[in-house]
Length: 350
Ligand SMILES: [Zn+2]
Image 1 (tube, protein in one colour):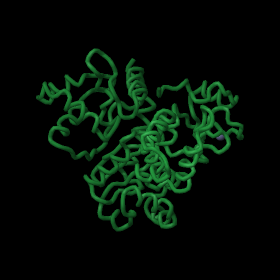
Image 2 (tube, helix red, strand yellow; image 1 turned 180 degrees about the horizontal axis):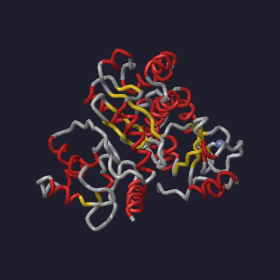
Image 3 (cartoon, protein in one colour; image 1 turned 90 degrees about the vertical axis):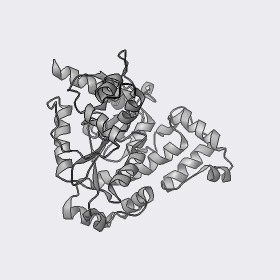
């Protein structure tokens, strides 16, 4: 359930405080970092500051906090006291790690907690905590995303909140020294299909993911393994170019990217990813096609796995691979995005 009404429809519902849309979509307010249900009675912000999400999960993973007034986490009535207690605890410190043992100490059955979160918020409790941690980090990145060069360093030193959150997620706070040794710079990119996180080394682009992707934390960790310790927020020439070309792509004005990429992987993965890069704009092919083209016609499943491990969405167009028989198949960024990307490309070709 990740599709949303049309933007105009959501805009109208949001400004009219139409409660019949509660639970259908959620609205993030970029200036405050808070997300609301449509019926929220708080003063409504300007259109340009709104961002719509199909679910709590997506708003949450994009780094928005629930509004205290309309309480979007309780769309279906009020949540049990034990849930409210857990949410309050996470609000106080999003970096707190609550393993099964910690839950039992609080008199909670881990399985019951897992089921409740899965049913109510569409994600397990652990995923919820992960989103909360990422949200804290992203909020800081968003606030400091235009800080580059020396300005970045100055802003960074004063930004101890981010330093701390970052350290808790990635182990070890990022420092100037590490950044100079080379590593990955990453920043936040707004797109019409939701926020993305982009990363680049000195060699080229190494990450582009929709920020609500479940795998994001894992992928940032993989980057750390691939490229060393220096994964820090910031920008460089590769990222500036990516932002420009990505904007043109979403405008329907760019059909090919002229970016330098940096995507280390196994021999097989590299073959598959290079094959994906050959699929022309607006064209789809199947996993079977890719398997045949890399000379391993039987390795369809392995091709699917390598496809799913692609770290550079859109630019390495894994969204152009569909199931035999025309079904869309999976997509890390959500199937609704895969469909929209393909629609965008087809519409531009006519
Ligand atoms: Zn609200």
